[in-house]
Length: 256
Ligand code: MF3
Ligand code: CO
Image (cartoon, rainbow, N blue to C red; front, side, top):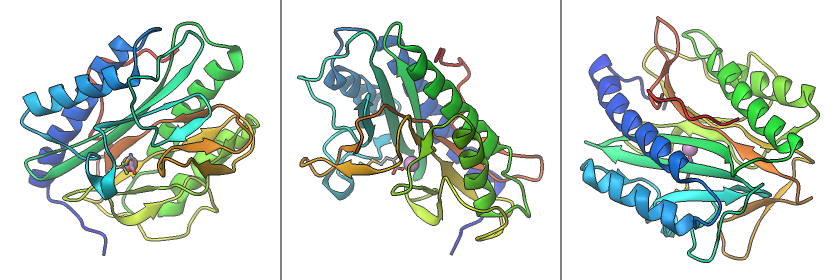
């Protein structure tokens, strides 16, 4: 069952989403050579606690941290570590989830660490563009697969590839709710979108081939061909007035 939320509920989800956006903005300001992914995790954990919220990922199926920090060929679910130091030229995907007053927000960005190669910069730009093209399809009467179709069209036009093994999801009073939101496929398939539905839309895009594998830590997903990977995610509500990006940041994060 796909839950449709009242305007009052969506406003509470906006509060959770706004916090997640603020945490990402603060983390982005700390992304530079020499910083460890554990430093970023500690910052996020403090900031979420200060807001009276709860990290959504910590303890989820045993996940040990507040954020996911995935560098270069790591696609998603990189576990923060004090031994993982950011280097100039890296790209880092940071995924943050939190619950506030019982409602969840979930958002991710991928950032360059200092100057990066042109291919990396293009990958980040195109993946973020694909997220916004997908968000444009969020309207009552639309179909779930319209979202993934928009992502796939944009990404493959650049010769990049869309990860198949992980998908976006409904979100609300749990982090993962129905429906699944793939980042590929034919348009016009799957459940019909209706006012009040809330979706976490999260394209994961590889510079090389689409295949991924999970490392022995049981979490970190990496590209099989070791190509770079990017991830952008927003929590988005379906409204009659158009998509409402609940994790929108007032201060945009400069990603390029
Ligand atoms: N944004 C990711 C997701 O929606 C983060 C989950 S990390 C986990 O699935 F550790 F919580 F699984
Ligand atoms: Co998500």
